[in-house]
Image (spheres, rainbow, N blue to C red):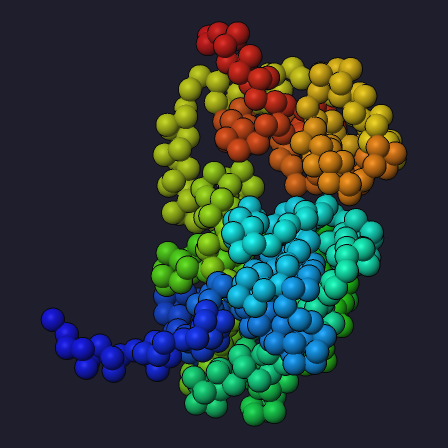
Length: 489
């Protein structure tokens, strides 16, 4: 058995102290050598990961949550008992909710629908109030997470938006904190640093400090396809402003705190390579990180191929698996979103899955359900008219279809009830205001096994043609009726 002396000598100084509260456990995250992935990519340089998921609230955004609150208190802008409102993809909200719980603030978080249920549950557990907004809403529209936050601030007394998108405390937290830690851990030698870009506070703060201390450092910004942050502008043409699954990076506008002049090179990433790399980081390196960590590492493997032996690349891993248990960590979710084909590990899992569900109907296409063309509503139709249509036909959901026949989203009884009862919309508002955009879709050629996988968590799936136009609406009862009424040949 190891002696207490040897145990203590192996622990960092902070681990041997009694901390005044959990906010004191924010920062001083470990730097870990990435071995297997770098070797398999034939990289000559040293590949390191800054593991920000070791922060108290589980992400790099704990740093700015703490810094923004403390700076606002010092400036006399806020006081305990006030209301803090923040539009966020989740992690900044968790950092602020954690600070609010300790310091005595009311906390309201507005976040897009696509953000994981795990983030919502953590926020609620910390005492935050949650308002979900349409994922596809433009950043400057009244129904976006930013627009709703501004409206609440105007309506509520003593309410403040600390505003991570424009607050100088955001990049300062990284200039004075994260970057200094990187320099200390690397003995002042960093040749390349790679990180995802969202608000831009992380990359702006770290890049500014590193360029002061290591003038030759190459700063690589990682931007998902669908976002418009990368430069030159032509890099953003592929899937421009299309939705993507990776959370916490990318935007459809340029945040004020993002200084793109500090970025030497941009790498665009897609959902599939990001999630597959995240699963590799977990499986091969034991790093329990989130989806945007996969984006950063996938980009780093490409960018660091230009580095030589003796050089060093640092990759920022922003958050942990905790937020994504029902998403990319879930085999069924990866299968449903067609992200699994490129890894032996997931192919083996799904080969087993398909054998286990290999009933007579599983390989049949969705077309055998002979679904009628569904009733639809236009985005400009009123909520009252949508409710009347649902009541008349006994529908629980209706596709919202644009003039060109493509699906904008789905309006559900549950979402209508939530929005109307909370006063966020009125019966006269257009149904576009309550449209749910994060829905599952299949084609007539998709298998019933794939549809059954979707029904493990969703009540319906929209059937579309190859050009994205509405072709049907499949529900659990449609599949059940087919299985029980049809006969195996």
